[in-house]
Length: 372
Ligand SMILES: NC(=O)c1ccc[n+]([C@@H]2O[C@H](COP(=O)([O-])OP(=O)(O)OC[C@H]3O[C@@H](n4cnc5c(N)ncnc54)[C@H](O)[C@@H]3O)[C@@H](O)[C@H]2O)c1
Figure: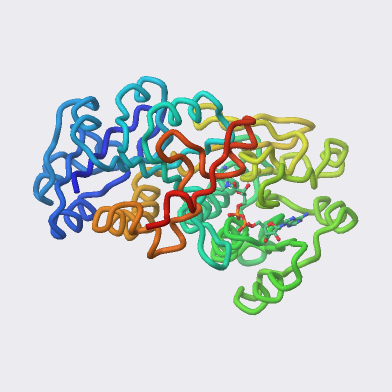
C-alpha cells in the first residue's frame, strides 16, 4: 500500500503520526511510505532519518495526499486539506467528528474512508488510542502543578516533596482513571502527600493495592471534597463520565475555603472541566487567578511535549496502521473488532451512530460495509 504522512498544519501542533521507526516497519513489509518535508521536525525527527528508514520525502502536502492510499496523521484535517482528500482514500487520524459539523460534511462529501483514533475500542471498552495522551497529561499535571506552586508564579510557595523536618505538600486528585493514576505516581514519587478521590470502589481497591504508602484513596462526594480542599496545595481534576460533560465537583463558592496560592490543574477541561471556574487556556497563556487560586486549564497538554507524545501515540497507532496497510481497512476490521467502532465515515455515508445523531444526518450501520 502507499502510505502518506503530511506535516500537521493545525496551529501549534508539533506531533507527527509516523516516526522513522514506524516508517521502517512499514517499508520492511513491502509498503511505500511518503512523508512530507519537515513533518517530523517538531517532534525531533529529521528528513534524513525518514530517508534512512526507507521513506521518500515529498516537498508539499498536495503531493502527499495525491499519492497515498492511506493517510496517517494526528489531528483532524482542517479546511485547506478538505479538497486534497480523494474518494476511497483511507484516513487514519483523530477526527472528533461530533464536535465539528463542517468537518463531518466535508468528509462525507469526499467519499473517503475515515477511521478515527478516538473511537477505536477494545472489548473491555477501553480506548487504546486515547490512553497514551491521558498518560502524558496525567504525568504533566504534577510537573505543571509543582511549578505553579512556586511563589514567583503566584503559588503558595511550597515544595511538593517538602524537606527533612518540613511536611510535604498535599495533592488531591479528583478521578482515579488513567490521568489520575499517572498523576498520583508522579506526585508520590516526588514525596507529596497524595489523596485520590473516585466514585468507583473497585477502582479505589485496585489503586490501594498498587500505590505506594503516601497515596490514599477516598470516596468522592461533596462533603469529602469540601473537607479536603481546605488543606490541599495542588488539586488535579481528572474525572470523566464517558460521553457527558464533566460534573462540577469544585464550585465557585468553594474557592473561598481554599488556601491562597492553591493550584488547580483541571485536565478534564476538554470535557468542560470538573472545576466550575475552569475555562480553556493555551500553552502561551496557561493560567489565571480567581479568589487567589491559580487555575491551569490547558486543553491540549500533550502538545507541549511533542517528542514524548509522538512516541506514545505512535506506539499505540502503529500496530493498527500495519494491519490496515497489510490487509486494507475492510479485511483488517473484519479480523480485528477493535477497528470496527473506529470507522466513522465510508463512501459518503456516516457509519457511526453518535456522529449522525449529533448533526441529524443519515446513519448507515457499518455492517453494510463489512459483509463480504
Ligand atoms: N487537557 C488535556 O490535554 C487532556 C489530555 C488527555 C485527557 N484529558 C481528559 O482528562 C479526563 C480524564 O481522562 P482519563 O483518561 O483519566 O479518563 P478515565 O475514564 O480513565 O478516568 C476517569 C475517572 O473518573 C472517575 N469519576 C467519574 N465520576 C467521578 C466523580 N464524581 N468523582 C471522582 N471521580 C469520578 C471514574 O470512575 C474514572 O476512574 C478526560 O476528560 C480526558 O478527556 C485531557
